[in-house]
Image 1 (cartoon, rainbow, N blue to C red):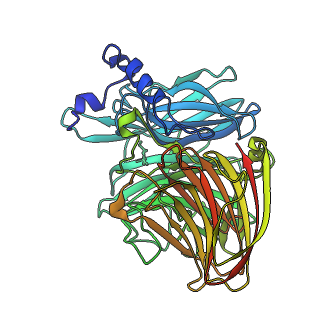
Image 2 (image 1 turned 180 degrees about the vertical axis):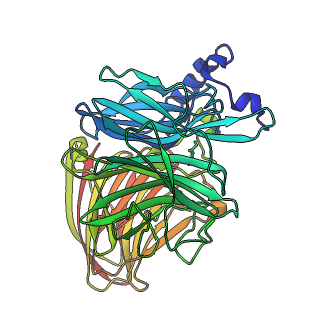
Image 3 (image 1 turned 30 degrees about the horizontal axis):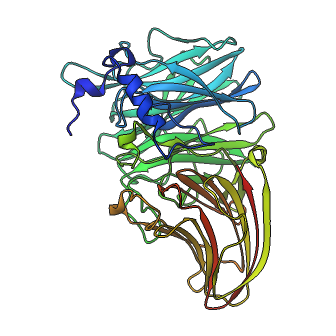
Length: 489
Ligand code: FRU
């Protein structure tokens, strides 16, 4: 069904009579609503935005189109949390529809200054000829939580040399100045990030492009993010237009990072190592980080991907955010761990220790649809071992370590409702290890797998039936020892 422009760019007050109520009722009947992930009340969620610790709470917004499961008029929806584990829905954060965000309040970031939370975002506007204009706007939240948009943009044009694909400002402060990186597309249709500088978050000067070694690396860079850790500079972004390379870059769009010397803000030179994917799963994009009060760098991503359809599209809602992860640098690599606060979600625990001898086994209490599962395998001589979960008569999601090929494999070909199968149903990545630890967070319609304490992460939606609750551990071609703990959530 073709959706008209008028329908796509409707604001909430333009909803048809009873539309929100019937969407809400539809969502209420969805068997795939999540239990402990941030998800939209109705409609479509995409990028995390404005992730900041302010006045004792984490504020996390997301891109939201309330009236359908397609990408329409984007709002910022506001959620907050004291502990990164329990989130409260606050409501609309930034409303689009003004002269400088007539067709959406697109992605952006937050920064605290003078007891206020400054939210800098891209105003997506279209003129009468449907030409896109990109403005960078500010909205300011006070200590009472009231958010007021500035009446005019803080960056009101795109510099020469770039197309209208110019968005997603990420702001930081360094030595008394503010900087922001904006994702951009050069007029020769290659992606890059550009930098602005400001003394006060209001007056911004265009400094120029961030200079990297990746001159021809996709046609657009979305959602740039820069921070420093352990005396290194880290740049995260979501480049569009990369081709698959064996196990890497298999999703329609990618998200990854560069680690290097600290960015030289005067020359904008970033001397960095190779581009590495952040997540090996099927559904991960447009991540954003913030700094916790104790100095940890915390990342949240969109558990979804642009231009993809999901089985909840006809149930009134689509997508969710990932759980928050702590980032750690280790030998030119980012290690990602679920934030320790998530242990608060743990309820009853079950444990098992066993040898698996070329067999598939179940254990008492190891079942469910929402849980955290840690399984540690010590290989003796098996060729493959791992776990099948959300398994039933005809369904299973399989996570396995292939010792022969030294690969971790996530297979969702039998998970349940198919999802974008044209991009394949299996994801793999290399890992050399005799001990393999899988930490899984299984929610009603998703799984996040942390491998060997965050060396690799696989994030994926899955859509099994409600009665596919089994957990089966297996080894093939030899013996592996297993120690596992499950906590109900
Ligand atoms: C990434 C993105 C951003 C944009 C937003 C619009 O998913 O395309 O570049 O700001 O989504 O919702």
